[in-house]
Length: 52
Image 1 (cartoon, rainbow, N blue to C red):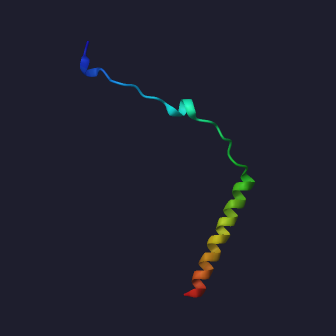
Image 2: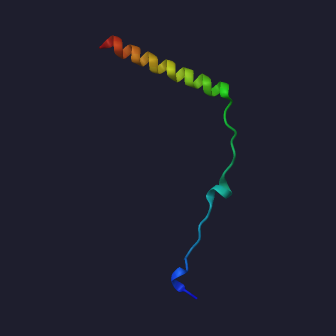
Image 3: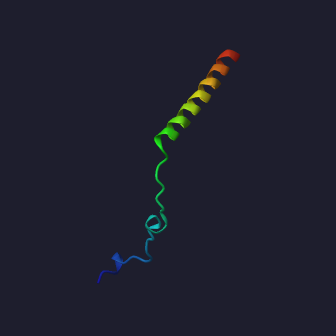
């Protein structure tokens, strides 16, 4: 028996025990969020451009 290969303790796979599947959001909802954020970014860029 080779005692140098022994390991103390163990590993707990938290994903295996605690993961709960959540389905992705609908594509329409994601697309609306992207359009909203893009519009906000464009407004900020336009505001910065005209204030310079």
